[in-house]
Length: 410
Image (cartoon, rainbow, N blue to C red; front, side, top):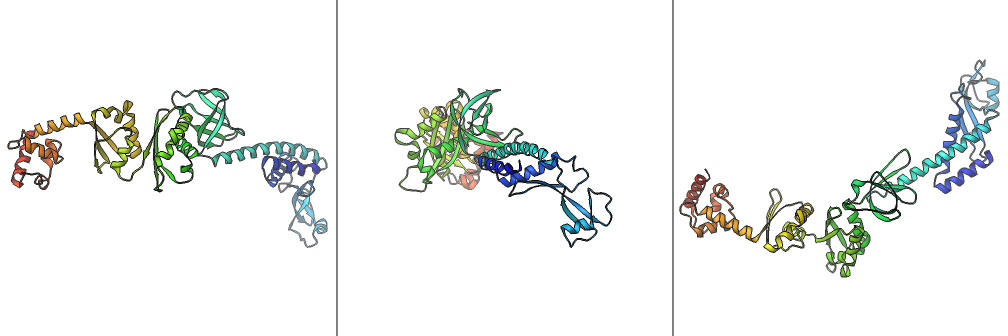
């Protein structure tokens, strides 16, 4: 075993990508552990494998004594000086104490350790490999199904696609190759556990980076991604290059690029949004494909009021509110959408309410409404200086209007 040990360790190390020294140290520790009964009387014993010959030997530290009473722990001065002439009584020296039948025990243990250490090193290598890939995408073949989860074969290990990380309605066949996002890599007793996701927004982002050269090259940047898995995503993109159309680059000629991504996502609809620093413009883009007539922004609370034509209202809101919900998540703004007829009816009601105030006719009521006052309460609480900006309203009239509005509210 001594002659072949180093060759075996070297071969295994190269094949599995494990440092040979790590294997040698592991074998040394394991042999010592397996032989601990033989060395109970020698607590300082250690096993050493010669890095050149592969010979396995045992050494133990012994105290130099004038009279040896415990041979396993002490050595006579005369014997010690044969090893090192400078030694004195009370000092310690390491001497070889290899048992005669030690080779058989060592060989058997070495074999076991090599197998165990290789397995451990393989697991560590796989863990490090996939840990570095967290946040990336990977393709694997469906191997089997367990309790609603999908187990994928990645080649050198398996990965788990939990049911909660699958898009609604997604069904896979055994052997089918699917692409997923590496959500997390965990250490487990049986080896690393790679957790995948098909619902994470990162999957959409990475597919864009993979499919669209302009993004990979840095000409187009993905600013934000929001998603309702399996149904619809909105991706905000921008570019710093004047001759590059960020949206067009993502769509591709006749939609080839975006269609390829949608196919990979099982037909999930994707809206590509032109990113804009100006909130009003960005919200308008985010509500695409609906056309916006008017938008008012309130920085306090990040609220926006959007007006669309009646025929665009359902498109702007989307099925079960999906379009406006995704637009709000993408922009970070609260979005309130109303159709033209609804806004007109509200304005007519406001004007009618204002005409209940003595001295306020339809003309003045309309002017107050145009000034942005949306109710009697807002009118009653408005600053006098703002009311005097309305044509035909002086300070005294403004005060009278406010008093009357408060009375009506009571």
